Length: 145
Image (cartoon, rainbow, N blue to C red; front, side, top):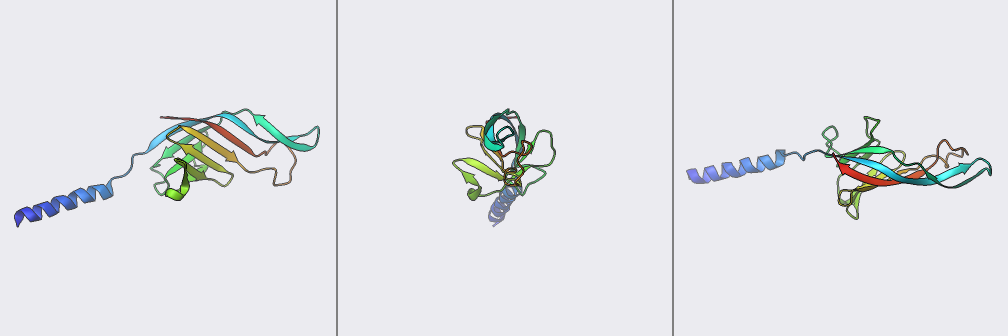
């Protein structure tokens, strides 16, 4: 009888440790290497495809301690608050990549290939024809910190 109670106690203790265990936060630095999008040509007064200078750096925090309700958060290195949030669940992954949402676009990354895509989908639709607010897509690589 004592052995049975001891076994039950040990099982409960082990299970409680599994429930209370938190996933470790892992950080990645993602750097843009190529970027393109829509660009307003002031001499023709029309929108064209354009290639832009890449190089924006993002900090990806998987299992972010400050935001435990999300699978990850993504912030430009120069900002503290996340620009993109990555929700938990299979419906937010595609081809082994995590899909993250933001007000201005999307951020998709793969920890298998250490590549990412980032989109900025504001501009053009607002009807303002200028080069100050152009939609872009950027691709690059990530490295663990």
